[in-house]
Image 1: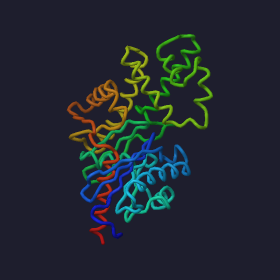
Image 2: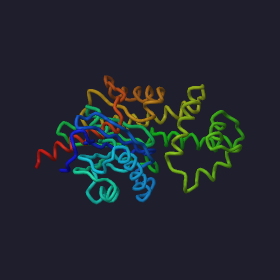
Image 3: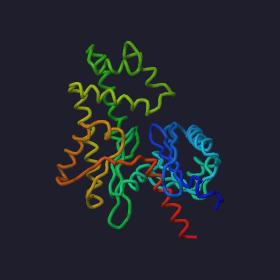
Image 4: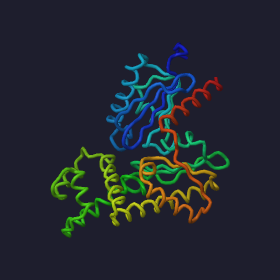
Length: 310
């Protein structure tokens, strides 16, 4: 172990979501002292080099603030992962960037599961995924197929579905609030001019996903098309989560996390309506702990586990 004093930060928790990275530092009692944010470390989305640079930026912010470069225990939840990362993957992302006595990395959904104190978590943010713990302690996962072949219910999926409709509206010369929102989002006076921006190599999926906010606003303002898109995505994702509930034998409480759940009440209501078709008594709650706080909790457990084994 290093010789940090009791007043020095013990734990570093990092959440690498699809859109951004958030980190928190906590003292020996788990009290969070500071936070830092940066760009995505999802190496499948942005590439390993960019992911490492983004992680290094976040770590530098923390180290500059506290005057330390080493931590007792660090846990990273990364949206690029489906399970616990092996040493090779962990070193590829963190090697030469994070100096910690104990370091582990796993799916961001697994971190949310640790944070929730429940046995099932559904996450809808830039992407979507659900994870549950079976009676024997094993972990089951549904969703998380990525934005190319999956992620129903996610902000990205909602945004792309709506943008495809905007293409049809533009071709049919239908001026609608949704089409006008798309032109505003891409800062063009004709939606066809958005093609270059949409297909630019510099356009990441998290940028496209942000259009979901505009779809939600149109839905709230009475746009039937936008409302249908959101409802359809909520129903599709609910079926995915319902399958997970069946696999793990049910859950007394389903924890919901992610920007879509947190900021779109209509999506949340439609989701739960569909869940209760197959699970009539299912209760759910919004997760009231941030992902990085969940990672702090995981970091403390990691240190405890390794200390007991030595």
